[in-house]
Length: 493
Image 1 (cartoon, rainbow, N blue to C red):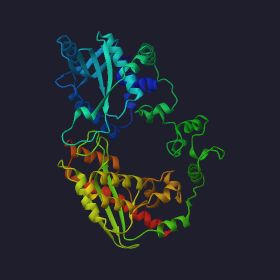
Image 2 (image 1 turned 90 degrees about the horizontal axis):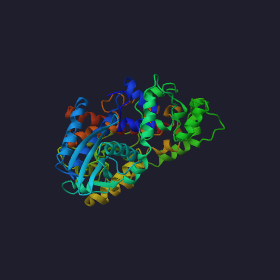
Image 3 (image 1 turned 180 degrees about the vertical axis):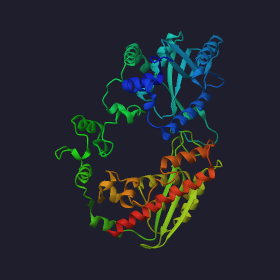
């Protein structure tokens, strides 16, 4: 394809940033290293798309495996239209060197209609712009679309038995929104092609467009001149427009933010900490927190998955489903640690049932349950209690015993510059206990853990399952051991 050819994705990329479009076309080697989490999102979207085809069954498929097959896809689409097929998947159209694909094209008694499938739970403005370009191209290929709709996930659907496809998805017409954008498309195309014909990479300052509506995959190239770390963009909780305001004023380093620049108390504490190297420790507040703990202590952390397509009965799309926990038990201050753990099987059974039963047994009847971010664990316990009413009272009892170890750091009773303005356990742990690290683990973050288990549960995992289960257990165990060591640090103060 020529350097000035466009597709739906490159058109939307160009509307977001012409510099990104130019580099994508002419200097793809400058792309960021592959992001595994982004690949997981793409894979999820593909799976949702295949499932949505069941809304309009028995369609002809024009999809392709390799870009060398694009012409074949175009030819198949035209042939199916001429043959009078009423449902076509991945229908391909090309006009004025602009290539688009319609997820689902349907010809009913009203005429041709296009359905674009998204794995989100609502219609976003960028989807309408997507659909407008597709409509522009398809209409110019001689197919007049009578309606254009977005198919997206209904997050209120609760699975009970086999998937009910028509309840899982919501179909929303965006015909009126598409009509608003149609007239401006030729102008946008001409502008983007003017940029693509340039000899050099166009100038474009960094800004909010770098992440809106999508994170740019050339950010490392464009942001290379920004201070690599401890810049104004690292001020936690500061609005993006304020960060760019500082940047465009020539203030790039966090330590150079002037004293009279308006910041919140916590933000000013972060800046001052970087400028002076000073730590902030409220010993009295920490003493009260530690002194109020009721032994035995149970240090609890669990991992969840949130699949777009609910895998188990009585679960909704994107609902957090716990599948694993780690528990360290300490009978008295500085006492011996007892470790217990649970990791669900991936045989298709609902992981929540055994998870609940073993957790209730392991957590005993009395003593504080230490978690990091009480809102998350507490919310999940309440959600489980509503579904599994047999264990509702026991789960609510566990919730009533939760104590949030995040509080001393969230409230800045303990803050050091090494925390970089964050109170997440991943920032607190290396600042307080540098010898404990996630860096040596094969699975070192919750996102990777969730994706590993989710693919195993869905039957699409391609690695060593036994080794991965062992890696999951090691990761979760470190989460609760980290809380034990952090509390010891607070107690020593």
